[in-house]
Every structure is written in structure tokens, then in C-alpha cells.
Length: 439
Ligand SMILES: Nc1nc2c(ncn2[C@@H]2O[C@H](COP(=O)(O)OP(=O)(O)OP(=O)(O)O)[C@@H](O)[C@H]2O)c(=O)[nH]1
Ligand SMILES: [Mg+2]
Image (cartoon, rainbow, N blue to C red; front, side):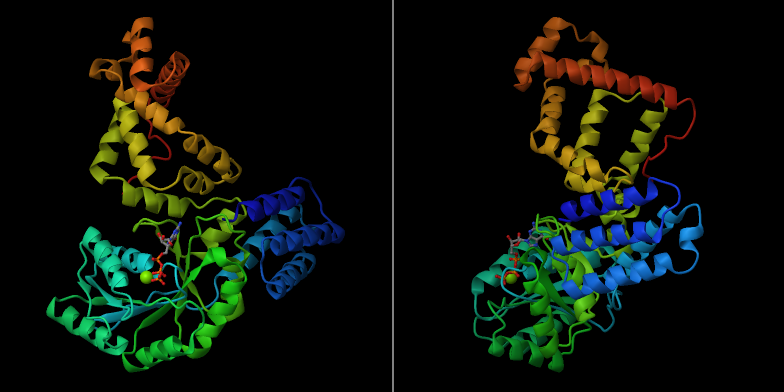
């Protein structure tokens, strides 16, 4: 989502770090560029103004410009200020009370139901036992959707006959949670098409009556500046405790998502990064700032790897790499594991210094290159997978036909694999392979 902004900021800031001393005028030029980049990304005007003013003041004040590393220091200031801009409010996800009640509210289609399922998985990972509540008395289909999602992740769903009042549905859910020994109740409410008074009052009443420990507003980050107004309107009526920004994986300019916290003072607690129920990230402002400024986000990458990789499998793989007995079969398995971590573009973006390659990597996946590699390996016999040296011309032709690829594709893969194997042999002279994930 933040690609265009990220590209521009990176360019501007590399102009600062690319030389020795910088002057106040250099800072001004850079800040003008930063301001344009943020405005173009649809960041709220006032937020932009305050932001650039703060960065400028810190950069030209003190002794920053006198130092030999002035450029880097200015970049560090931008990073810090961006982090504090993104990190408004109390970001802790509170789960006190038995059961702890979490209510999700938001406009129609913002992603409440999807987020309810994602949050269930999140709290399960925290060692809790969630129960979902379908608190939409108007559309039975909404409860069906939640039930389907709940079944897929093995979380019970409480629902009530159409027409039951929202407050009663939620109390029923809390009773059910006590019965089923569930300690976290996640309430999915009806979508509001607009900021409708009746529905708003219904939520306000619910929050007064229950009251939930967390009332999160689910906001579609693709809706732009309007989302800021929506958040302000909700917050005026309902005591919100935080925001969930969904569809961060989309291609909107992202500025609204960046400014919504600063404008409303509400903390962003989670990011939705995809349609599947595991596509939820705890929001870390420093990590997002790092990603936007092209400094990478290794921590999130490691967490995703830990979620996707089986620890024993990872250890086995490391052993193979270490002893240089890594085969095409292992490579196939690795490719599948990595793909479980999410879209390749998102992953590459988190590697420091690689942000600029994210799009390229995603493009090559979208063009089916990974699938081609998988198809080629699958078309090989077990012997061939274990020892590609047996691959003579006729075997290669057979594999190309079998995988629906070309001889050139097969040759390229085999060549790449043999080179990789050589490199692993060199690296694995008893040394630890850098970058290997372990729990
Ligand atoms: N790409 C992407 N799609 C998402 C994300 N979150 C939700 N969606 C999609 O957005 C659409 C709407 O999501 P729902 O969870 O049904 O939204 P809702 O707020 O419950 O909608 P209503 O109940 O009708 O108000 C679905 O197609 C979801 O798959 C996300 O983080 N990324
Ligand atoms: Mg819904």
C-alpha cells in the first residue's frame, strides 16, 4: 500500500545520506520533498505540516548539521518522528475481565467479520479460548458468514434468532462463553452503510450496558481521507479504544491510514494484511516506519516465519543445509513453506535494503515463476530430485514436457540449483548459516 510514498521518501532521504556535510538549505529542500510525498500519499494536510515542522526544527537545531553524519541523523529523526506519528495512544490490546469482551464496529464491508476471525486466531496464540458472537440482528447471512469462518478455525459461534436485540445477543454470548469455559468474547456487529443514528445509538447502548474492555473500530484503509471522518464520527458517539486498519495489502495511497491515528488520537492496534484468517499483524509503529523508509522489518518477518514454519522441519532443514545435503526435493518444500508466510512482495519489503525489489519479486511470482519451478521439480523422479547430475538432455526434455514448461526453463532451474548447492557447500564449512530461522 505504501509503495509510492516509500519510493519517494527513500529517494529524498538517500540524497541526504549520499554526501558528507549538509546545510540548512539541504534540509529545507528535503523537507519540501517529504511534504510533497506525504501530501501526494493522501496524508492529512495538518498532520503533514506538523510533521515536517517538527523534523526541520530538530534537524537544524542542536548540533546535527555540524556533525559528519548529519545526513544519517536527519534520516533517523524522520524515522523517529514517523514512528511517533504512527504510534499515538495506548496500543496494548487489553483482555481483562472474564470473559474479556471485544466489540468490533465499523462501516459496511470494512472487514469486521473477517477481523473477528483473525482476532480469534490471535488470542488463541496468546493462550486464550475465544468465542465469536454474531450480533447482527438484521441479516441472518451475516451470522452464517461468521459461523463458516468460526468452523474453519474451530471457534464456537453464538447466534440468536433474527430480531433479537443486540444487547440481548451479546449477553447471550457472554452466558454461552461461561458455559463453554471461553475467556474471550469477540463480538461482530452489523455494518453501517452510513453513519446511521439508530445503529450508532444501538452500539453506544451496547457499550454502556456490557461494557467491553476493547471497542475497536474497523476501518478500510482503502477508503482514503473519508476514513478519518468516519473514525471521528464514531468516536464522538462510542467510546472507542482503538483502530484496526484493514486491506493494508491493497493499492490505495495509504496516507489516510497514516494520519487517522494522529488526527483522532486513537491508537491503531492491528493491521489487516489479506483476506485469509491469518493475515493480521499487531501494529508496531516503528516497524511500519522502517518499512516505509526502506529500512526493513526483520522482526515481523521472523514472526511470520515462526508462524509458518514447523520448528522440527526448520531444524531438519538447517541440518541439511549445514551438511550440504540439500536437494531439489527440499527446495520444493522450502518454496511451499515460504509461500505460507504471505505474498512474496510483502516479505521482500521487510528485508532491510530490499524494499525497492519488492515489486519485482511480486511480479515474478504473479507471472507464475514460482509455480513453474514447482511444476518442474514435481515432474522429476525422486532420483532426479536427489541428484540433478543425472539429468541428461532426454530427461530434461521429458521434464519440460511433463511440467508444461520449456527446456530453457528446466536448464535454468537446474543451473541455479547446482550453483546454490555449490554455495551452500562453501558456506557450510561447519559454520552457522546466517539468516536461518529458529525458535
Ligand atoms: N485484501 C483484504 N481484504 C480484506 C481484508 N479484510 C477484509 N477483507 C475483505 O473485505 C470484504 C468484506 O469483509 P467483511 O469481513 O465481510 O466485512 P464486514 O465489515 O463484516 O462487512 P458487513 O458485515 O457487510 O458490514 C471481504 O471480501 C473480505 O475478504 C484485508 O485485510 N485485506
Ligand atoms: Mg460482517
